Figure 1 (cartoon, helix red, strand yellow):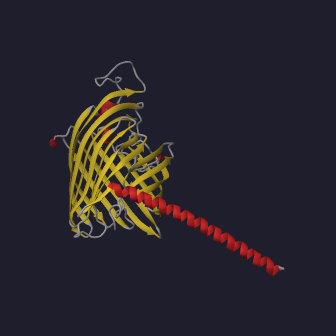
Figure 2: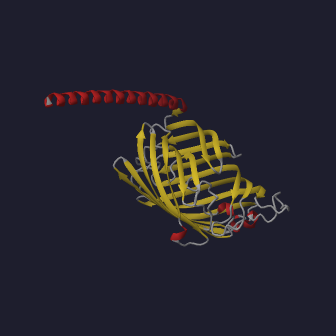
Figure 3: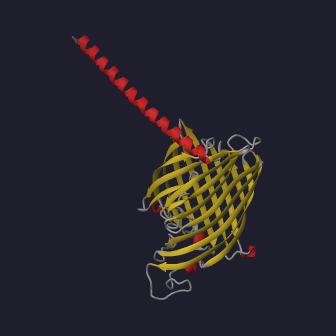
Length: 390
């Protein structure tokens, strides 16, 4: 009798395993059909050339600063057979509008002229309805709404003088204009921009201004891939001088130190970043170092919400491929904004969240990312954007 029960139990287990295998097979078949359809759609938007790949995708995004974004995103990626594996030249651009009145036209270039020379460039025109809360260490004015117009360009040239070690020069120039200033606390009087008098926003020389800057940079890069590294180290230190002698309306100095490392963990990758930025002098608020936003602590959704003369942050992220072109990430970090370089543990802001990744190009890991995060200050952020946060 016991043997019969055991045999019946075994038969039941086999039937269950067969049903599970059938269900798994059906699920895999469905996933294969979905990925096949996705590849068919992407193929219609991707145009291989003799030297690289050109693609044009519909673009979208979201942040609390811009609202929902819609547009197109042309991308060109090309290889140079003389370059080491993992080095990719990319030219990405976007033309977008948003539900909060944003208009953006931008382009970003990363071009390795050879294994020894690197050129980076950026050009942007941005019109945006924005907000200002004052410096984080002071919070001296009420929340202020304004409209900004910005055009700016940046060009960097790097020359290697050792394995992975580069020295370079950076140049920046642009013009910033502010209008329609409107403070939540109005006095009934108006300033020259049409907003309330003494709103505080123009006390930082922010009505309008041209900025021009130059500075040296030292870069070390041992990452195995510039777009999605799985191992290696990246270190960038830059000093940028804004000076009226260059034709700039503002005079200040910006210091930046950025350290990143990546470690493989089986099928996952652990990324770590430590960053410090400090600006000293007559700094307009719109060029103050930012602690939050899509590039830094993502739990602070509006990049102007926490700004000051000095910011520092540390964070880590676990990245893992999930299925087809889709990956997932978990991340956490902490940072501080202050009037001068200092560390006060009691003033740290903590941030954490998760995200999804979608690889755009067939052979290179250029990702669109969707991230959602919260912070210890009660802020939150949701972002859809191109490339990794670091």
